[in-house]
Image (cartoon, rainbow, N blue to C red; front, side):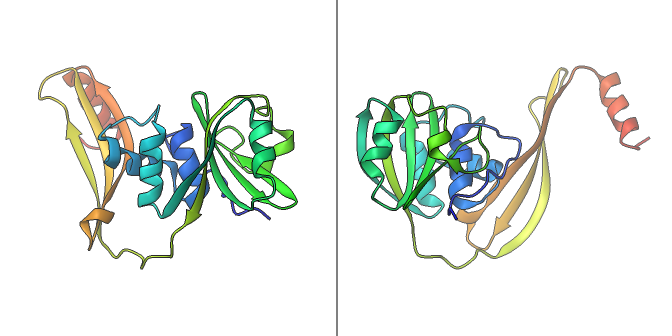
Amino acid sequence: MTNLKTVNAGFNKYCGPAVLSILTGRNTDECADAISRINNQHDIKGVSITDLLKAADDLGFNHEKIGENYRSLYLALLDIASIDGMYIVVLEKHFICIEVKKPSIYLCDNHTKSPINAASSARLSQKVLYLYKVTAKPAKPQPILLREYIVVTKDCNRFPMSITIKRQFDYTNSYDNRTILLASFVVRSLSEMNQIRLELGYE
Protein backbone atom coordinates (compact mmCIF):
# COMPACT_ATOMS: atom_id res chain seq x y z
CA MET A 1 0.00 0.00 0.00
CA THR A 2 1.39 3.37 -1.05
CA ASN A 3 1.44 6.55 1.04
CA LEU A 4 0.75 8.65 -2.07
CA LYS A 5 -2.73 10.15 -1.95
CA THR A 6 -5.29 10.22 -4.75
CA VAL A 7 -5.46 13.72 -6.27
CA ASN A 8 -8.09 15.69 -4.34
CA ALA A 9 -9.17 17.73 -7.35
CA GLY A 10 -10.75 21.16 -7.08
CA PHE A 11 -11.00 23.81 -9.80
CA ASN A 12 -7.23 23.79 -10.33
CA LYS A 13 -6.23 20.83 -12.53
CA TYR A 14 -2.53 21.61 -13.05
CA CYS A 15 0.38 19.35 -12.12
CA GLY A 16 2.02 21.58 -9.48
CA PRO A 17 -0.97 21.76 -7.12
CA ALA A 18 -1.73 18.10 -7.92
CA VAL A 19 1.73 17.02 -6.68
CA LEU A 20 1.13 18.84 -3.38
CA SER A 21 -2.32 17.24 -3.15
CA ILE A 22 -0.77 13.79 -3.69
CA LEU A 23 1.66 14.41 -0.84
CA THR A 24 -0.74 16.05 1.61
CA GLY A 25 -4.24 14.89 0.67
CA ARG A 26 -5.35 18.53 0.50
CA ASN A 27 -7.62 19.92 -2.20
CA THR A 28 -5.72 21.20 -5.27
CA ASP A 29 -7.24 24.66 -4.74
CA GLU A 30 -5.74 24.80 -1.23
CA CYS A 31 -2.42 23.65 -2.70
CA ALA A 32 -2.62 26.30 -5.43
CA ASP A 33 -3.24 28.89 -2.68
CA ALA A 34 -0.09 27.68 -0.88
CA ILE A 35 1.90 28.26 -4.09
CA SER A 36 0.20 31.64 -4.58
CA ARG A 37 1.44 32.76 -1.16
CA ILE A 38 4.97 32.05 -2.39
CA ASN A 39 4.93 33.59 -5.88
CA ASN A 40 2.10 36.15 -5.49
CA GLN A 41 0.44 34.86 -8.68
CA HIS A 42 -3.36 34.63 -8.85
CA ASP A 43 -3.66 31.89 -11.49
CA ILE A 44 -1.45 28.92 -10.64
CA LYS A 45 -0.62 27.10 -13.88
CA GLY A 46 3.06 26.78 -14.75
CA VAL A 47 5.07 26.63 -11.50
CA SER A 48 8.82 26.76 -10.92
CA ILE A 49 10.35 23.91 -8.93
CA THR A 50 11.70 26.49 -6.45
CA ASP A 51 8.20 27.79 -5.67
CA LEU A 52 6.77 24.26 -5.57
CA LEU A 53 9.37 23.13 -3.03
CA LYS A 54 8.81 26.23 -0.87
CA ALA A 55 5.07 25.51 -0.86
CA ALA A 56 5.78 21.86 0.01
CA ASP A 57 7.90 23.10 2.90
CA ASP A 58 5.04 25.29 4.14
CA LEU A 59 2.69 22.29 3.89
CA GLY A 60 4.94 20.13 6.02
CA PHE A 61 7.55 18.47 3.79
CA ASN A 62 11.33 18.73 3.76
CA HIS A 63 13.18 18.04 0.51
CA GLU A 64 16.60 16.87 -0.61
CA LYS A 65 17.94 16.85 -4.17
CA ILE A 66 18.86 13.29 -5.14
CA GLY A 67 19.92 13.77 -8.77
CA GLU A 68 19.42 15.64 -12.02
CA ASN A 69 19.61 15.32 -15.80
CA TYR A 70 18.61 11.67 -16.13
CA ARG A 71 18.16 10.60 -19.74
CA SER A 72 14.86 8.95 -18.81
CA LEU A 73 12.48 8.40 -15.91
CA TYR A 74 13.33 4.70 -16.16
CA LEU A 75 16.99 5.40 -15.34
CA ALA A 76 15.99 7.72 -12.49
CA LEU A 77 13.82 4.97 -11.02
CA LEU A 78 16.73 2.53 -11.25
CA ASP A 79 18.80 5.01 -9.25
CA ILE A 80 16.31 5.12 -6.36
CA ALA A 81 14.81 1.62 -6.60
CA SER A 82 16.46 0.52 -3.35
CA ILE A 83 15.77 3.74 -1.37
CA ASP A 84 12.30 3.73 0.16
CA GLY A 85 10.59 7.11 0.26
CA MET A 86 8.52 9.65 -1.65
CA TYR A 87 9.92 11.79 -4.45
CA ILE A 88 8.99 14.80 -6.57
CA VAL A 89 10.19 14.24 -10.13
CA VAL A 90 10.64 17.21 -12.45
CA LEU A 91 10.11 16.31 -16.09
CA GLU A 92 10.15 18.81 -18.93
CA LYS A 93 7.07 20.98 -18.25
CA HIS A 94 5.58 18.47 -15.80
CA PHE A 95 5.75 17.26 -12.19
CA ILE A 96 4.98 13.78 -10.88
CA CYS A 97 5.16 12.01 -7.51
CA ILE A 98 6.93 8.71 -6.96
CA GLU A 99 7.00 6.42 -3.95
CA VAL A 100 9.52 3.62 -3.62
CA LYS A 101 8.22 0.97 -1.26
CA LYS A 102 10.29 -2.10 -1.94
CA PRO A 103 9.65 -4.14 -3.96
CA SER A 104 7.15 -1.74 -5.61
CA ILE A 105 7.42 1.73 -7.13
CA TYR A 106 4.28 3.85 -7.44
CA LEU A 107 3.62 6.91 -9.62
CA CYS A 108 0.89 9.55 -9.46
CA ASP A 109 0.17 12.89 -11.15
CA ASN A 110 -2.74 15.01 -12.32
CA HIS A 111 -3.30 12.62 -15.24
CA THR A 112 -3.35 9.27 -13.43
CA LYS A 113 -5.13 10.93 -10.44
CA SER A 114 -4.59 7.74 -8.41
CA PRO A 115 -1.27 5.98 -7.75
CA ILE A 116 -0.32 3.37 -10.35
CA ASN A 117 2.54 0.90 -10.72
CA ALA A 118 5.35 2.99 -12.18
CA ALA A 119 6.29 0.18 -14.55
CA SER A 120 3.02 0.74 -16.43
CA SER A 121 3.56 4.49 -16.90
CA ALA A 122 3.84 5.94 -20.39
CA ARG A 123 6.42 8.45 -19.06
CA LEU A 124 9.32 6.02 -18.55
CA SER A 125 11.19 7.33 -21.60
CA GLN A 126 10.81 11.02 -20.67
CA LYS A 127 13.84 13.03 -19.54
CA VAL A 128 14.11 13.88 -15.82
CA LEU A 129 15.48 17.33 -15.02
CA TYR A 130 15.54 17.01 -11.23
CA LEU A 131 14.74 14.40 -8.61
CA TYR A 132 13.92 15.36 -5.00
CA LYS A 133 13.25 13.12 -2.03
CA VAL A 134 10.56 14.56 0.25
CA THR A 135 9.95 13.64 3.88
CA ALA A 136 7.13 14.69 6.15
CA LYS A 137 7.99 17.01 9.03
CA PRO A 138 6.79 16.17 12.53
CA ALA A 139 3.08 16.90 12.79
CA LYS A 140 2.12 20.41 13.90
CA PRO A 141 -0.94 21.17 16.05
CA GLN A 142 -4.04 21.57 13.90
CA PRO A 143 -4.87 25.24 13.22
CA ILE A 144 -7.97 26.59 14.97
CA LEU A 145 -10.57 28.05 12.60
CA LEU A 146 -12.02 31.37 13.73
CA ARG A 147 -14.47 32.00 10.91
CA GLU A 148 -15.36 31.05 7.34
CA TYR A 149 -17.05 33.47 4.95
CA ILE A 150 -17.60 34.43 1.31
CA VAL A 151 -15.72 37.30 -0.33
CA VAL A 152 -17.04 38.87 -3.56
CA THR A 153 -14.78 41.28 -5.42
CA LYS A 154 -15.41 43.43 -8.51
CA ASP A 155 -12.51 44.56 -10.66
CA CYS A 156 -14.24 47.79 -11.70
CA ASN A 157 -17.46 49.77 -11.21
CA ARG A 158 -18.49 49.81 -14.86
CA PHE A 159 -19.21 47.17 -17.48
CA PRO A 160 -17.74 44.80 -18.51
CA MET A 161 -17.24 43.87 -14.87
CA SER A 162 -15.06 40.98 -13.66
CA ILE A 163 -16.52 39.32 -10.56
CA THR A 164 -14.63 36.86 -8.35
CA ILE A 165 -16.16 34.80 -5.55
CA LYS A 166 -13.92 33.20 -2.93
CA ARG A 167 -14.32 31.33 0.35
CA GLN A 168 -12.08 32.75 3.07
CA PHE A 169 -10.86 30.82 6.12
CA ASP A 170 -9.42 32.81 9.04
CA TYR A 171 -7.41 31.02 11.75
CA THR A 172 -5.94 32.04 15.10
CA ASN A 173 -2.53 32.13 13.42
CA SER A 174 -2.97 34.42 10.42
CA TYR A 175 -0.30 32.53 8.47
CA ASP A 176 -2.74 29.59 8.29
CA ASN A 177 -5.38 31.78 6.64
CA ARG A 178 -6.36 30.54 3.21
CA THR A 179 -8.67 31.37 0.33
CA ILE A 180 -10.37 29.04 -2.13
CA LEU A 181 -11.60 30.34 -5.50
CA LEU A 182 -15.26 29.41 -6.02
CA ALA A 183 -16.06 31.24 -9.24
CA SER A 184 -14.85 33.97 -11.58
CA PHE A 185 -16.87 35.44 -14.42
CA VAL A 186 -17.47 38.58 -16.47
CA VAL A 187 -20.76 40.53 -16.59
CA ARG A 188 -21.00 42.59 -19.78
CA SER A 189 -24.04 44.76 -19.05
CA LEU A 190 -26.57 45.84 -16.46
CA SER A 191 -29.19 43.60 -18.10
CA GLU A 192 -26.90 40.60 -17.61
CA MET A 193 -26.46 41.54 -13.97
CA ASN A 194 -30.24 41.77 -13.53
CA GLN A 195 -30.72 38.42 -15.25
CA ILE A 196 -28.22 36.82 -12.85
CA ARG A 197 -30.08 38.31 -9.88
CA LEU A 198 -33.38 36.94 -11.19
CA GLU A 199 -31.91 33.45 -11.77
CA LEU A 200 -30.67 33.48 -8.17
CA GLY A 201 -34.14 34.40 -6.94
CA TYR A 202 -33.50 38.05 -6.09
CA GLU A 203 -36.08 40.49 -7.46
